[in-house]
Image 1 (cartoon, helix red, strand yellow):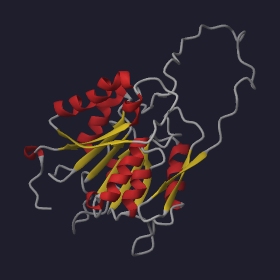
Image 2 (tube, rainbow, N blue to C red):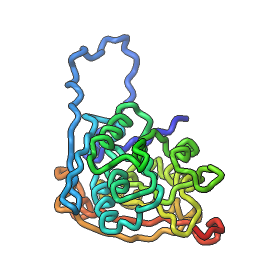
Image 3 (cartoon, rainbow, N blue to C red):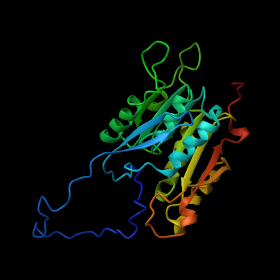
Length: 285
């Protein structure tokens, strides 16, 4: 069964689809019945140094990749405030859409960043466009490549192809079997995919006491907040340590006309997920 990391549209709660019976084309919509797909858009993010990052977004995506989510902005701000969380470390972002946190991590000096989303050509092309269009990202010392790469990844799938992007860990040329930092920004409202998200953490987070998954999200549907938070129960069942490290309120909700408690819809929280000591590899790195 295919795994699709689709983000359910939070601003259209009542759009329940029904199966249509076979009608022999009698009720088939004319070719010009639906409006054209909206054109691509751009958003911007201003860093603490005053420089701006322009982010291209697809015009529309069933995966909800046409939004710049509040969780992405907030975790990017956090990395700017705490650059040691990503500097010199390997980073893997899941369901990245525009890839803002990954781009910020790369600018702040991450060793290697692998920014991913569902392997849809338009999404991957858009992430590369954002990478290549950022003037603050420069090639490495050899002038050959940057410290960030975009790739496709399905939640819960084998992460081995992503490890191939990482620099060799030792003189033997062997690639590390995991990332130091994982980023999951505003993914938790996809409740049916919680187990697959945790599986991705389990298979791709390096087993080291300093390794962390940053899970940052807003409950855009306040009446389902308990289902968002159930993600952490799944993580705990797998033996992970879960720790809240951040809570911030945005000036306004991302979807201002949505129903539900506005204060909850403005609140973004951040959580660390770590390996317990007994699960970590014996290492001095």
